[in-house]
Length: 136
Image (cartoon, rainbow, N blue to C red; front, side):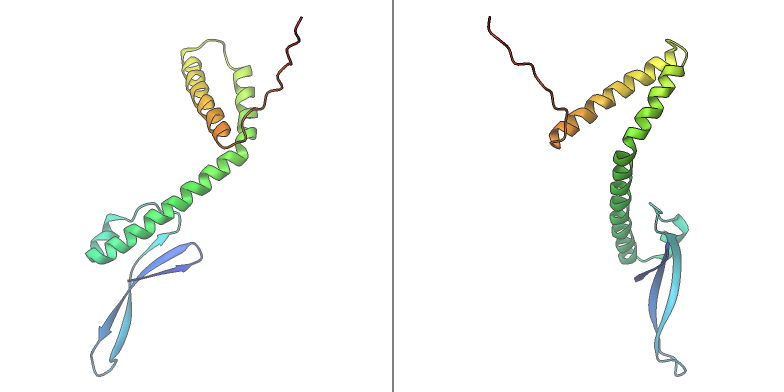
């Protein structure tokens, strides 16, 4: 099976030899199409594939998912400061001490702590200017 990309579409093609005296060559049969952003193939498309073709497609989709996930993480990191500003405005204008707000804040603090730890591990964490103790 061949996987051809045209723009944002992947086309799955199977080449079948046609022994008839008229052709005596391979013919391309389109099995289906996917968007490059699809994470899974439809059941109808999977039903048309052989086991080997299905393995090939699953491998390609798993690689594509890795690329999409990496790009999403990078976009999130680049836009983080903007979203922090929006969240700050939200919390400043929100009604005080609602149960929903409390739960959201707890989850945000937990994730924030994990983010700070990841920044330290990456070598870009917080730097503190410690006061020099004077004896005396």
